[in-house]
View (cartoon, rainbow, N blue to C red):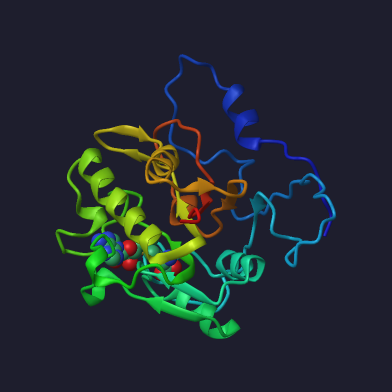
Length: 258
Ligand SMILES: C[S@@+](CC[C@H](N)C(=O)[O-])C[C@H]1O[C@@H](n2cnc3c(N)ncnc32)[C@H](O)[C@@H]1O
């Protein structure tokens, strides 16, 4: 595979247009979204990691045969698999399994996994419904507030009517996951920032950290910037001008010893 530096053809096409002329909604001729762009990543230091390609920049264009790509919000399984290989837990808590991506990864590598979802009636914000202090690792990929609607159930995080209501439920979710972990267990949260029709840009990654820290968790590894390969927005054409977000963020927190 040859590597080349990025020239943004969209920028070249836009800047040659006069600012006062009305902008027709046309795909610039030079922009071919289907054409991959290769970027040279920084070299990672050699270290004793059992998963050397797991760094703060994570790109996995192939989702793997886990869960269902047809499920809205499906995240692909390779990052989950690499995190489990890295932390080597004996048990995994997966209370927002969606199409079962984390469950399928655990099945493949032979790790016990508790999987549930509101679709089956299990509310991940209700701590009374789950075991306590027993898992070594937890994985959650919650709704990015109301970016996508997942269920008709009023307990669904994607159904919360305001940001405050979402954050109240999100706090219960993180508290429940923390409570399900053994001391020293890790919680990995995959979250993305989102532009809401009413609230504007909402930094859900920032809110995630604030909630986790308030609940006594400690971030124990770098943010992992996961490239959003295959996102449906990448195939759309928008009238407005904005800086596209092409990633979400995986944050890993540790529960302290009692
Ligand atoms: C982003 S999707 C997860 C998709 C999953 N990572 C996959 O690859 O298929 C978020 C999930 O959270 C679930 N959910 C939302 N609110 C919930 C709640 N209160 N309790 C349990 N699950 C909930 C939704 O039903 C949805 O399946």
